[in-house]
Length: 96
Image 1: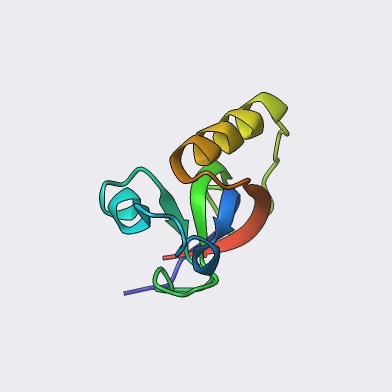
Image 2: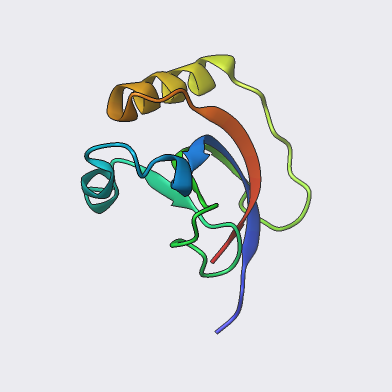
């Protein structure tokens, strides 16, 4: 078993910010929200980012990121619809 990392751009909030959302666990269980682990096997951590991946590299090496404001705006709108909260944009390692 190896540890793989890549980069991800996520729209959302840290898990600890979402505990106040009434149906938070249901959203996670139904896969309506994604979790960006802060480190290998860290999906349950309070500081994992919960929301939507808008970009993910396919490697741990440098890769080009093309900024797409429409895609980010759509993800923010969907997050607000699901949670009632305003999302932020995050860049993170994605370990799995």
